[in-house]
Amino acid sequence: MKKLILITLSVTLLLSLSCKDNLPLDKDLTKKSYTLINQDSVEVIFPENIIGHITVMGFIYTHCPDICPMTTHNMYLVQKQLNEEGIDNVKFVAISFDPDRDSPEVLKKFGEIRDLDFNSWTFLTGQKNTVDEMMKRFDVKAIKTDKSIDEEGNPEYSMMHTDRISLIDENGILRKNYKGSTLNLEELINDIKTLQD
Picture 1: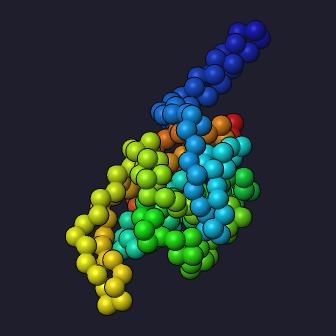
Picture 2: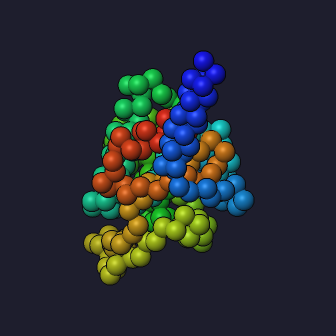
């Protein structure tokens, strides 16, 4: 009987350790704070605003023709699946690396068009130097391509950028990065469940 209990405990420990191995990163985000603005023009201190919640965070810009809409949609699909399974305590954050064009109003409209629930979703922007510093911390790169001016005098450009969704645990620790536009939904959902165990 004692042998059976020891074997059961050993297997349980090995399984829990192997699940945690699927979360290869251990980067403490709480060592540096960033003052940002959300879609309602309210000042937010990141990462203080996500502490206490598992967070799925994407990096986007609203004028993106392909990758960013797919990244946002994949995050939406993850939330939908989690909700269907009764898991509703996960936060979703999208940070724009194009603060020159992505005002809070633009970000809010971007979320509204996609019927995202702002009770669990937050869109963030901020001063360019703050956003740039934050992107470096997450190893996300965004480079403007050739720039032109539209008929109304507004700047027109695209951006080549890192395709990224990040998983952050409730303590503000970055645990894993994923390719946002081609996300394996089940992988991220299983990783979220691992963090809840």
